[in-house]
Image 1 (cartoon, one colour):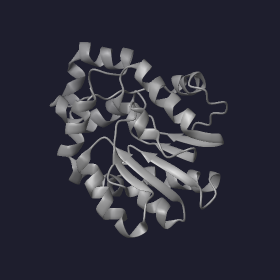
Image 2 (cartoon, one colour):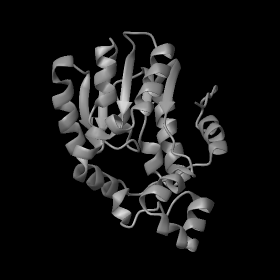
Image 3 (tube, helix red, strand yellow):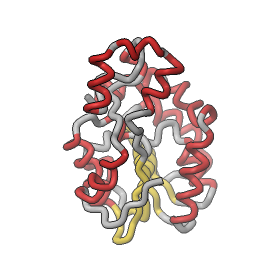
Length: 214
């Protein structure tokens, strides 16, 4: 549920702030793709902005960016990070709420977090349809998904003994949720790990006409 994810990110805000330093490949690939596709000066909504790392980079690159996140702690950190860069706004809202998308129509939308915290397909579709309606004609959505094998790879490093929980591993592989190779389930609350072949059909069902998977 949204409240559990909010509490989780409120609790780990310092770790979230360091995440891209530990995984620089993610930021490089994402920002490179974005800058190639979206003109400078475009109006961008960074929904689920975390602590504002992407928002900060895009504001420095000349984009006009509004930032939102469901975690008040993340938004406070993002406000400090971007204070001198004059974002369009900072607000606390869940991507399932229509107010999270206000301020458009947008030239581009970043959804780099919420889809892997929405285990129910209907919720993923709701968020994607709201994103689609908030875009200008021809606008672009940049969405991030976590593949179903990711927790298996990560788990082999963090907690290989988790593989002995056969029913839990089978549930993960069959449904993409319910187990993430963490001794403590609160280490990553409410995750959904997708099959790569579901990304394009899901986006098309939400109304996106052209999909490119990186």
